[in-house]
Length: 452
Figure 1 (cartoon, rainbow, N blue to C red):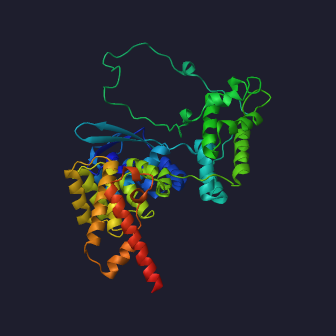
Figure 2 (cartoon, one colour; figure 1 turned 180 degrees about the horizontal axis):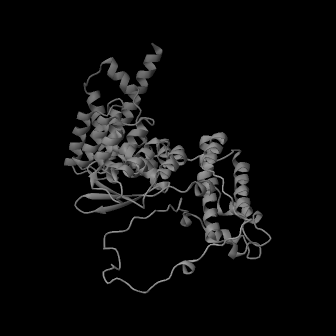
Figure 3 (cartoon, one colour; figure 1 turned 135 degrees about the vertical axis):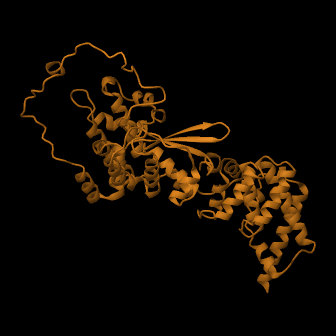
């Protein structure tokens, strides 16, 4: 998950640009064709950004993201996720200027035409899978109009030279160009979903396809774009793509794009027994990821994850409350602790407080770690183990021994890095002895309770 707190803040400024004048027809295309794929938040953000640019202008005034939060009545996280979806679908380009403060420029892109959308191999399949056959056909019919191809007619249009001539007189006051920093109004075009050529190895593809089998001239730029999109859509490797390409070569040594689409779809269905692939977002995948199982995996996880994601994972996918988010923000910006240290702190506090992120206790430990200069997850783990050893010693020497507290201790779920056998050589010997004594006493209590 992208570290939200480093990416964007409510106080960050932004301005909006339109990549050409947008029309009501564009709004119709966005609502009917893109919204089923992107969701309401993304389309709402798109429309608000569009409306913030005054009519007959191409650029808005500068505002802060708090304005968007107020207009949409959503959190900065939802705005950020909506922005990412618009970017991924080619409806928004984002530019960043970092000086004393961060300032974003959001350039709104017009949607694809209906023709281009339904001819796109990825967008058409994802929309079909999302809304079903009947709704897909209904939407397609909405944008289909009768148009005579004029095959039986002969064109008799006059050319410019047939109708006009020039007297070669130019006014001396005629400006040669538009002033710098200004532009004439224009109609923008959307280039569609960009194909990531870096993620597809055409050299590996060519290795199994001789020139005689597939002439290189048949693999035009447009065909290569289609190949990359189909490989992403159906999860096909360079090796998997060879057979569909071979089956789509025509007698004229050209690639039949419709045959290529069908061959890739058949290959996908044969491998997965699924009709069509569904569109998924990385944010959903990150939320659903399984927690790490070994100490090395845990350390990597704590170093790379954001504090918000660690808390979400600890809560089994439930989003943190506003109070918890404010506490994390306080640890980042006021205590200035690194993310990896905050992640260890979150796990430690949840362990000690029966899965409650208690503000007072969290700030107390955070202040201590700031004073002793903890900067890494490894240092934070070592300090947490020392704190836990002191806690066990306190319990043994006469701490609160009420039944309720003892019950909580018996049910403690220690994190892997607390009990990992792999790291015992690096642990403090006194801590190991204390832990072993504590575990033996806990086992004896369980046996006595069973005998009673």
